[in-house]
Image 1 (cartoon, helix red, strand yellow):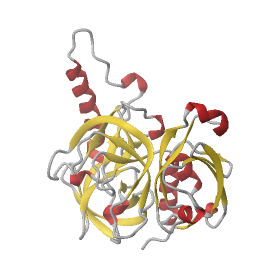
Image 2: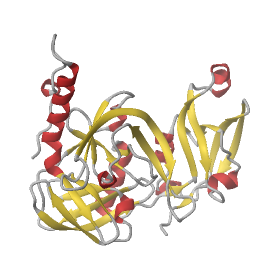
Image 3: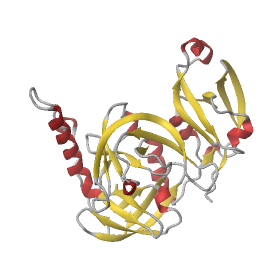
Image 4: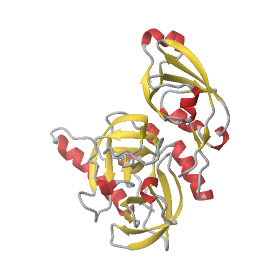
Length: 319
């Protein structure tokens, strides 16, 4: 079993007279010692990146865009062990994929909860130790709870929810873990959007996706075709909206369900069905199999006035 820090074991804050840089280095070093043994380099015929062991029986967590159509991948762990890992399943909308090493693997890293991360929190990104560039990079959380469009030949691709950090964006780091200062994996680094420092958060929604991939090898997902980010409701409109925050539409996929419903870039989404929306997270929670072809009443603010439209999510079918 890998070691997980308890609250009393967290690297202590800087002592009086201790340079802040020393406390920072101790924190990053402690996370590296805990998580890096579970990190692997991963390569298919088409791509290369990183992954992390997250179960006792050798399951690996990585990015779906790295795996693509591959059925297996070569992996190399920090101690030099090499193995073959079979693809169990992937979910392009969350950019998460699960593989299983033949013959097991090192002790797993522990999954955390990205919902507890706040702006300015220190995070550590870990990558294939044998890859080009550094294996460890540290930074802070700069933004949470937003979706991003994906660089893809297929129109309408997006990753539903990401964290923005200022960690260095090494190409081979994609698929590797983003850990908090307690040594828990709270995100999976993604390069799908072509922007460095992005990670798919590991929280309740991601855990549901991973559990389904482990059990069934795929996840049936509903697709709305809208990119959103958490945004405040202007104070003078809060009495009308009935809430202080919403999900700002930053892009709409042409021809998708949201576009057909009349949702526009710049709209501030407030509610979808019975769910109150304050960012990408709540919308992502809705878009599973039970929402496919079920019409949702979406309430939004446009030009200072409330508008309600009917949107019908469709099933996401990988190309």
